[in-house]
Amino acid sequence: MKTKYKNLQDAIEILMFDNTLKIFILLLLTYEFHEDNSIDHIAECLFSESNKHKILVNMKLMKNFKLEQIIYVIIHEILHIILLHGNRLEGFNDIITGLATDHVINNNINHDIDKLILNHVSPPTDKYKPFIIKELVDENMSCEDVAKYLQNNMIIHSISLINNKNLSMTIDEFTDYFKNSIKNESVEVTYSINDNKKYKTIIPIYNNKNENSLADRASQELIENFKIFKKDIELKFKERGLKTGKCFDLVKNEIKVIIPFTDILRKIFKNSLIPDPNKLTWSRINKRKKYGQFYAPGTLRKEEYNNLLGCIDTSGSMSRHDFALVNGVLREFFEYYSNMTILYHDTKITNIVKPSHPDDINLKKFKGRGGTSHTAVYDYIKKHESDISTIFLITDYYSNLDTIHTPKKYSWINDKVIILIISKNGKKSIKAKFSKIIYAEDIIIE
Image (cartoon, rainbow, N blue to C red):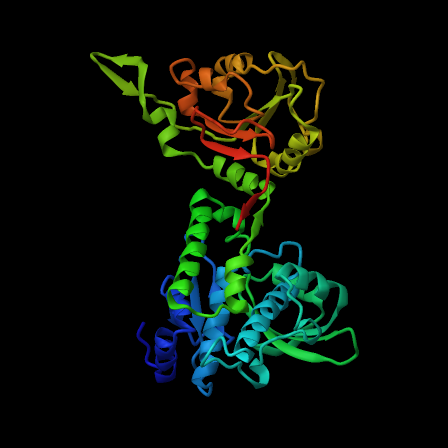
């Protein structure tokens, strides 16, 4: 980790060799760490879908910082990444998100400095003084709790762009501006909390949430990585016999991220619109067309993945809640599918709906007859397979799917994107292979 700035190099060496700070250099080594004097704040972290997160520091702005203050900034950015602060506060505006996450981190770092748990660390001063909500200093609150507090008690008087001091706006004007801006910007916020006294603070705002949502990174690998990380960090502290402070408790205890089921489903539907090269039927041998002694690939090379069939299990064990979760997502994606068909069934097909408008999509609970079989459904798909590209099944999986879902019985299985959505109380043991399997419940990473 070489740098032309001696004070940054010295700060990194302190991180490496001080026992109370070693854990942070171990974390830093797993990220990309760069100097970037073009950013308009002292530092920022960029979240990546592949876990190759980046931390950027502007050494021109920190040229007069003491070593202890540079270390403070680095630890601050590391904690943002560990705690997934880039995506945790859905529903809050970007100003509140930035301030709430900054307060949680700065409050915990300052506590550990005061208790002498962290050595060689001190907060920056003047305009880069860390944001803290004084009345919440002794409160052990998550960033979600702090965001709610700010939403209820904070008045934002003005927002100014760092690179354009003449451009000042209200929170509503800023929201409209930011939606139409593709740039990441740092802003100076003038605010008051519970009184008439005005304060100022600088925070970076990142316009990349849509690209790096939690749903994009929701995978079993991510969950396992977090579990391994927590065990690893606990072991490292035990090995060194270090006292653990609030920063460590943040890492050990507060990593609990809820990924909504609907977010994951949106991602899956979005991906299903992109053809999988391995499933394009024209590229495989077509045994129905024989040229002399040879079989040739098919000749129809235009293949769409935008014909959707939904197969809804209405047996007695399915709940209205299971269907309600999917309704909204289907309505959002209606415009992307040229044809959508909803098929309701238990042991037989009981109803077929072809919505012509998003409002026509209303997956609902029919009076089930107790049992479930997918044979009639799979026979229907076989009959109409040329008109179907993507299939989603909502079921509790107490059915005959493990028996019939095999290419030997239904050859179309290899050609379709098949999404299996299992109800919250559905069967956990799945033997058959599907394109995607998702349970109708939120994923919790902790």
